[in-house]
Length: 148
Image (tube, rainbow, N blue to C red; front, top):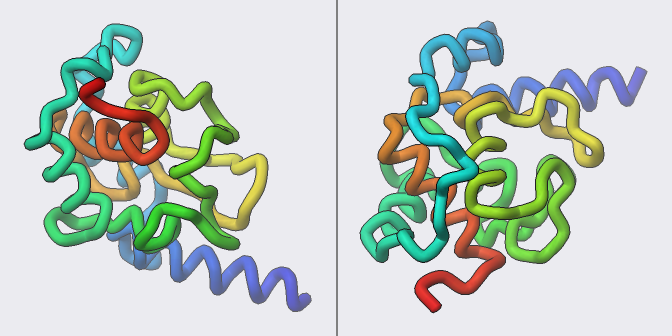
């Protein structure tokens, strides 16, 4: 019973933190989000700009937009009980490449391998292709040298 209550509370907190209402679903967020206009396999980390990193940082930390990645991944992106660390070399659902991170943001994590949190597509909020790429670039930069 305690686990069920804990899970329900976590789901409610995650839904609110990811920009959704308590009664919205991941399907609603996915329907509201634009389809990817970029083939993730073609994303080259050498093309990441300082402007993209600044935009991605602002989106990640909830300074702009309707979502806040830090709500689950933490302000330092080192994770916690809800979502994984994004600053290390361990990637649970992809290989950690720029394209894979871009794709993971698009699809979300409906069935986490670890942790309590489900990540809705696009973090639960619609992202323009520019913002989608910026968040992916920022997250990529947390564990990879960029511009070198």
